[in-house]
Image (cartoon, rainbow, N blue to C red; front, side, top):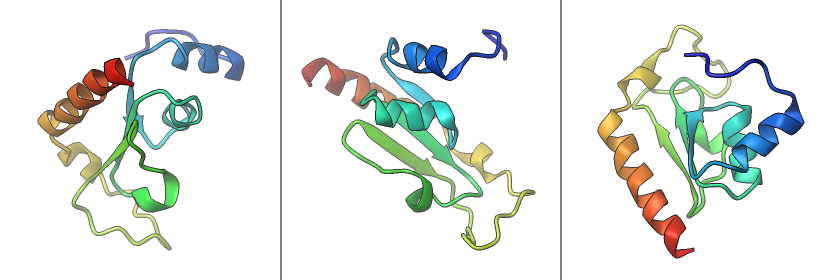
Length: 102
């Protein structure tokens, strides 16, 4: 789903700074959320979460059950799709409620 044209880095930082929660895969917007102290959930499938993200009270990671080899990423591994929506929603609700209390 495309909701906007391509953004510059400054525009992306501005957008991320205006949201209550960022949910995404291991990409720039989720890393920006962490850097800007915006609550986020980063989803990992074929890449190891411990290598690419810092989990904190505001920034959570969810990893698929895939056996990940950090030395050789399997580009045909689509296990990220196995992450349950309910698991994401549970953490999202927690982060949004906690954000009110921060």
